[in-house]
Length: 202
View 1: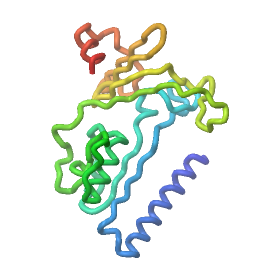
View 2 (view 1 turned 90 degrees about the vertical axis):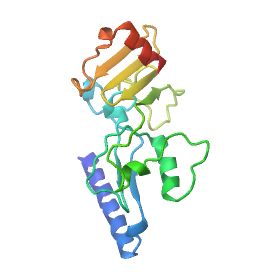
View 3 (view 1 turned 180 degrees about the horizontal axis):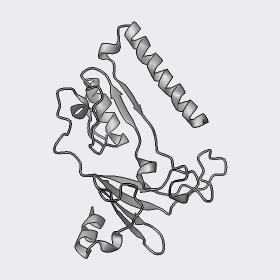
View 4 (view 1 turned 120 degrees about the vertical axis):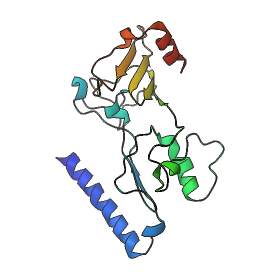
């Protein structure tokens, strides 16, 4: 109940900000971007609460944009990452992004004059988890049964998830999201050697 109430409070806050922008006459040249730092599992996969798995429930986060020439209600399915925010904000501001910035500007995706799918675009995104030194005072420390996995590197593509775990068994996960959108069935054993090598190399 408190989680739902907190989301409602955020919704009201964003609405108040947008109303104030309109009152000040700034709504026609201001973008509002809403996102989050990570997802959070709350019982999925029979795990206690946590956030470090490679599954969508932990890595898929909202990215909502309103502003000039942004199509209302449009949903864009391109794979984007938080590293795309810096070049996006730079382009909106009419500046070149820093040369050190990773990512791609999303402005061509969100602009009302752009197609809903930009091509070419990235085919996959890297998701990785590396254990930080344990700190008992860390407010984000994981509970013992939270499902905090071993270190891993994963490749999230439009229709699949490939994971290599850094554990003694060198476990591999592969999930076909077209047939298994909830990522419940690891079908890595069905990958032929060539496909597995290609995914590993990527």
